[in-house]
Image (cartoon, one colour):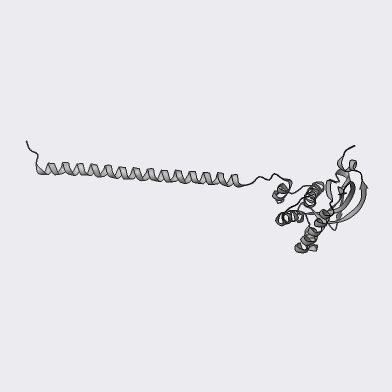
Length: 221
């Protein structure tokens, strides 16, 4: 028996609805897959970009690079002796090493980071840099070299309270090659002041200088 036109139309309509739903499902599925693919590609790109940036960051290897990279805001020396050790280390690098103007300026500012506010005020940056650079150039022109340095420790460091300020008196000594086979030992006397819980250089002066033997300087017998 032949179906009525109404039943045929209902069947056709259901078939068309089914096909339409299938198409919508396929389109939705494809769209979701595309979004996932885009997100995956974007994530991969970000990971690769981060890895590339990390590989491009140069790890400090030389003494010069290590001193420039040292963050004194989070790693400031805790005692007068440690301040003087870092002071000697930076000065040895500055006086012994050939470097660019930018590198010199970076190390110069590391030294000034150890100055008290009083000493900074007494030494305007521009004039200080000019004078210090001239001293280093003269030192290197004279073929001198800082071989080693030593900061006083323990009971040798004297503490006093002056005008309600904690102060520390400490001496640092340098062994130097003064040219050829000549050697000398020189001294610098420092006053450090406690400022914001950090020992800062309040003032210093050149002490005596005396001849030394190569054995004294190098530690050889």
